[in-house]
Length: 305
Ligand code: GLU
Image (tube, rainbow, N blue to C red; front, side, top):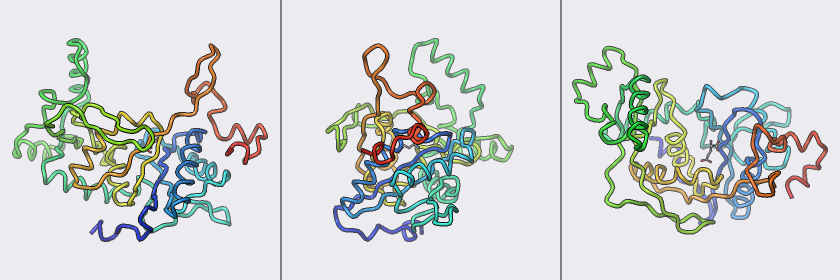
């Protein structure tokens, strides 16, 4: 049903459909505007679609005021999304496009439908471990100087019998849904990054949480489902996400979905006090905030150039 509701887009063959997915946790980072600009230009050059998706699955960190900040920061610099939340002429905020909703917390039913499918196929499982269990495992792993996380023998809920699961559900034990990380035949996975060329990293082996105990997906799961049903062709994002690609490709393959092309751009850096280069820090560098340039009187076109 979802595939019918969100059919492949009717666009020229090489049209790029891409997006930005900022999280509404505070200010709009200048790096976010930069990535959005790159996306918008490529979509435009290929008669594609550039959309905005608000990635607010981290409900503890999301703040209401940040939603308009994101929309205004993009639109005031001329990086207006073709689809997603936008500011209308009367100043109100509306959503446009046929592939929405474009705010992740409004897409719960879509995520749950996909999670249900994965559960039925056994590639996802309910994990009933408590915070204390997880903490204890972390301590043990640290003491043994091995990789931390839930995998292999540490993934206790992975091997529960159906009856045991049923019993725990009946007794109301809280649970998350984890990926049953598949056994892979090779050590590493290679893919072509459209800027960096062939990259290679170890396969994901962690039983990553995909749905949290409150029913909200984690970023990884939301991105998988959204970029499939929103028919994203290219994911162009900051290079801090390169290490997540093995997990993302694994998820696409478990759903039998065609993955988008992954492309990672470098972070905007500044010359550091010691002569080297470093990433702009949200906390220490006022110029990390898009608002800073406006307040200091930099013409918008100059910032975009
Ligand atoms: N929500 C992620 C962020 O805040 C988006 C990453 C992506 O584009 O896949 O950077």
